[in-house]
Amino acid sequence: MDNEPEVYYIDNRPGAANYYNPVTEAIILDEKLKEYPLAHSHILSHEFGHHEHRDNFLDNLWYELKHDIELAFSQKPAIQEVREYDQATEISWEEKKILLAGRLQNLLRMHWCLLIYPAGKAYRYLKQRSRGIQKNAEGGS
Image 1 (cartoon, rainbow, N blue to C red):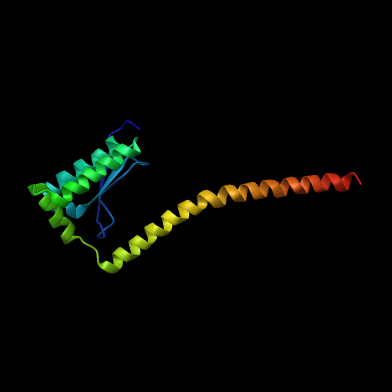
Image 2: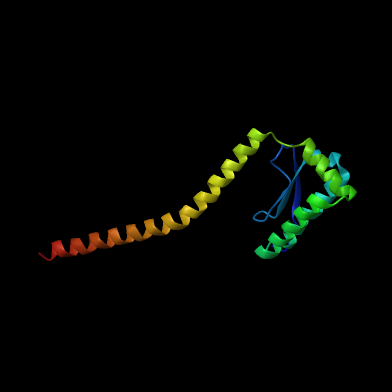
């Protein structure tokens, strides 16, 4: 996992690109981002930063918080161009609701699976064991 991430450009539907994938160590960027050179450079650099912080959750979280603060308050030309790009590629409120619902569903599922799967495994183990005990008891009669 010491390789530089590869950068891929996709013909993006709004809201679906510009991220670092730590599993594949790839940076996925919207092709349209190339039309905004300052924003492109800034976002690409930001995604490489995720690669640098990939092994430390808290560092990555802190890195993202600092970036979000910069996006909210900075007047740098690159940040202004990022805002222009975001505005030009913004998705509708309906699409945002769909994406948010999907993310919330995945988050909830992840949490209930942490409870359900171990409980199911324990249940199957106990059920199998009780069948074995019952079978031995019947064989001994």
